[in-house]
Length: 332
Image 1 (tube, helix red, strand yellow):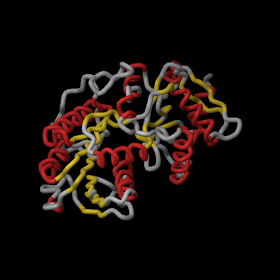
Image 2: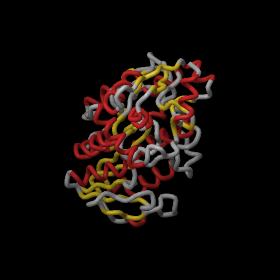
Image 3: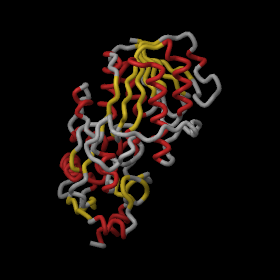
Image 4: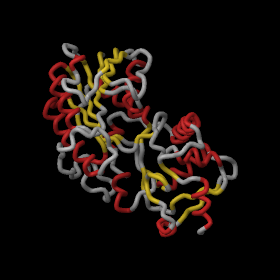
């Protein structure tokens, strides 16, 4: 199979390309080549999707499968379709769980209501903006993919993607923290669900779907479980001897200025009740279609290995500093 990855140099795009090469496919990666390198065995075609006639370097080429991991640009998606849809077979677009209008209801499927499509901010290819803008652009991009490719389209609404290459520091905070041991502050949220997908499992499924020409729309995540159970299992897998999880009431977290989910002075993966639906979609159909999540213990060990490669003492994008955590625990 001749496969084009629009991207292919970082995280999910690179992992998809790597999996394609591993299976013996001819893999072409279209990217600037500035954020990272393509895997050995793949060919890099340098393109800047912000430039006019961005994909001219691919003129005349045909592909059995295309995988587009465009983050935050309707223009990127629509121009890729205009340039390549008629010369390509199966087309995978990696969308986001952010497309859903209801963030509170647990157990929704892909039939749930979506945000209104947005095309106005097409020139801002980054999700570091209003999440409703991000979700709306993903909705508009999904619509463009389906219109251009019809039954050749696979739309994957990815949830939280974790694993080697994840630089957002959310999931990785926990194996890194548990590895230091001691008393660890965790959010006291026994009713909060949580789901994620390892980047390698998502990439393997995307490549398999391309091989099988699987059409449709799926939520890209594993099954939902209680967050505290997930944290306990991570601690069991990688925690130092004597590690103690200390549940901190939500009221105490808020009084201490600790924020949910991500960002400085946060407890990552903690979601307010208004966003439990965001981390607990019904992914039964996805699992039936072939997504195979690896054991959490393996995910935790590999995430810790990646954290160590980055440096456990680095300044993080999410989580508490040791001093901040000590201050929080002192409030109990």
